[in-house]
Length: 315
Image (spheres, one colour):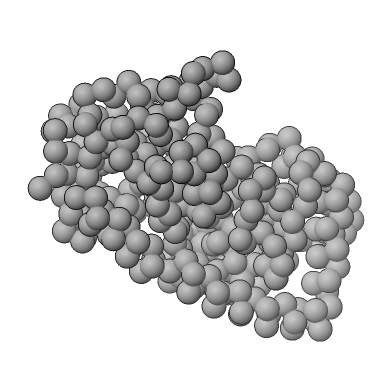
């Protein structure tokens, strides 16, 4: 039986993309597929989540019957893997598909998705699927919806706490957070950056946070938004360039990028509303409905079933 061989970048700073690659391999191994994970540096281990997957060296031989799964970040170099007969691209950032080695002057033949050896592409959102279908409508593109562990991402008693991630659009992050700290409307609030925390530490912070701030605009899917909603937090963030099924009412407010003033004023309005008991009662009811929605739509079982179904059809 053919092996499913995932290649992962070396774990360094916390990355939802790398965590998702590990999760795929773990799901497939539990479903009795012969799944393997390769990475270049075996001494580099993920510190922000636990896993039973033991990676193998990237020098491991790929057999003719194997299928190699590569991240979209390899860019044009995917086409250089001539000896691999069957490949699948795992694209978790559709809007970065032409970022590594591509040039607008290149001939379309450089696009790896048009390579006959690429038998399918996996994506993490329906928007990414629609985007990549523009390349070649006949190319097989399958959405494997992300999931969240609702056993750890769940609400606790809320504090006057605002959480955010700083990896994307750092100029806007710096401006917004600095202005919020300088002005008076949020003086009684803690403003906490979640970068560098483990998965359990992120869950603990979000479970107590009243508000989550998002600064990403080009994500394939924003897992932190999903986790924040699961924890009962209100979300405010820049409107993504793609349609985002989470950054909208009733989950929160979307801000036009790169408007800093609108962003800050929206956060200050939220902090003012939070002082109203009637407003919090209404929000708690809405938050309960939101959590029911994400538990149904983004359950681990649904994601696992989609992944197993895809690989069952390929092998």
